[in-house]
Amino acid sequence: MKANEEIVTLKVPAAAEYIDLVRLTLYGLAVKIGFSYEEIEDMKVAVSEACNNAVLYAYGDLPSGSTVSAPDVAPHIEVRFIKQTDALSIVVKDDGRSFDAAAAAQRAESLHGKTVDELQAGGLGLYLMQALMDQVQVNSDAGTEVVLTKRLLKSGELA
Image 1 (cartoon, rainbow, N blue to C red):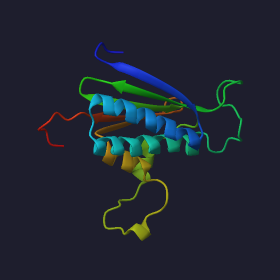
Image 2 (cartoon, rainbow, N blue to C red):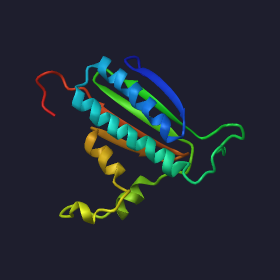
Image 3 (spheres, rainbow, N blue to C red):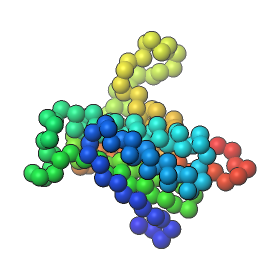
Image 4 (spheres, rainbow, N blue to C red):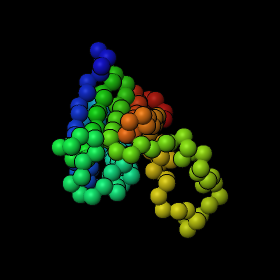
């Protein structure tokens, strides 16, 4: 941890009903930091998408109550909110099946010129996170870790 960083860590069961808790924590921290309503809403959508991906894809085919890495540990998602001087980074980490973002990006078709009816359900989460956040990193060494960063604009700055 750097001297100018503050970290809040939240560990929740890998289940859809706990994603609201992550969103509420994000809201509380982002308001204190000084993000606008629109920026907070963008961050909430992006973090929800990252958490949903962990629930659906990292642990999606495990029977309820199954364990992943340790015998007595139920599947969970760890979310770290890292407050920096001029930004907020949200790290969503799971220990489930890894996700290869680079390979997924290569397989993805261009969305340019397509109508909504031509789009397939699923597969747009990474694009959505990238559109809403200033920086998105995906690390897939052990499980998957998604790092979402939103910079805090000073008054008078344009996005």
